[in-house]
Image 1 (tube, rainbow, N blue to C red):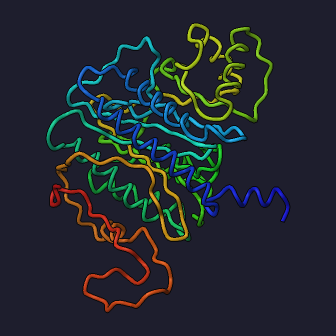
Image 2 (cartoon, one colour):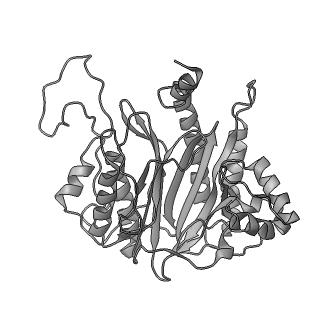
Image 3 (cartoon, one colour):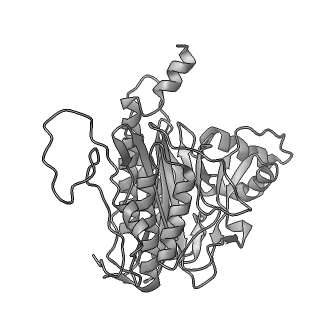
Length: 392
């Protein structure tokens, strides 16, 4: 085996050290999410919530691997975004922004963390209110989370990406919601947040992806948005974009001094992972970023919107396809939901009844089967549909 092959082999989940780094990143991220959600109170400034999430990740990752000989990169893998109500994603404003969250807002928190390039990402939807969530807000959050539970059970070795695309659309429809178009769930690799193997949210003629089969030892960020509206997001204002990622394969000699200054700073501070313009020398940033984007040195993450009055919910989780089953490493507890819809589709119920863990073959005595036992080889990690008949 060549050194290259050996190195490639060591960098997937067959290495316990790699698994540890993914799980350590996820542990920090879950706590960062918990912190941000706890701060989502009426009149809290959106930019302050974003800053708190980012600061926590930087602080906690900074405490890890401090005394190692070889420097280990660690920190933010995706800046904290707070997207409210009909704003779909990527809202992470500059320090001057005065937006606040209000009572009753549907708040989507999206963030990412990495240790040595091994990335954990998460998104969660929280409504700023006491007591159970009801009506269409409950429907769209239940649709997103039930779709996520189904996806968790279908993202497994031997299954195809198309199986997941079809299933999550069926789940959303059961709640009279739509999966948001144009979203890709990417395979994660070391220092790669947008791997080539993807799951498409909605298959349509405008957007196609290569068929792919999930394999053992892969990692995915499963990214699901549902909407009470049409599920066709659009960018309203390019100036709202603040998150970018350096396109490492592009070169161009920038003309403006401000652009060269900013691009040099980006190359030093954020050579690979997405970043927020808040983290740059702000006065020069807007001007310099524009030239960088125009010449495709930076990939922008635009702020997208549904129609005013619609609600969008978002869930994202990181899953490790381990030899003993799927291991979801990022999540946050849900508020109590009381959706208006009842899910009685037998196919959805069958998906949710699938286990996520596979028992080790052999070892120990076989117990006598009881009524209601799982099929041989699967642990009981089933889920219930969230619906009007199951309000808890």
